[in-house]
Length: 125
Image (tube, rainbow, N blue to C red; front, side, top):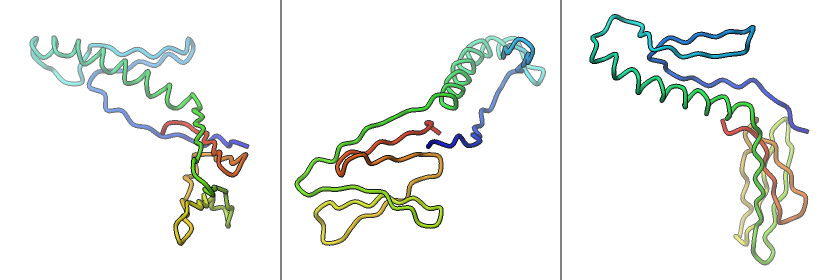
């Protein structure tokens, strides 16, 4: 079961942003926060389009879930999950003299359907 948690990302804006909740629209203007010269205003046109692209990418990162399937290849190589007191660990048997443990971040969900297949689901934050 995947539990969606609160996501916090930050973007430093150099222009003003207008949010219309009624129409669900976000607008980025060319109006600067401070009084600047005409030459600097021309540079803001390029900055505006960059900020629009960064804002779109940030919203996409937050709203879309990504799934990655990993296959462990090797004779006797195995992976499993361990849940210990609200802590999820990946337990790898990779042919070393010792076992390898990896702590899973809270924002990811891990599934081991087979001993050599691992599914990772989560946002890209």
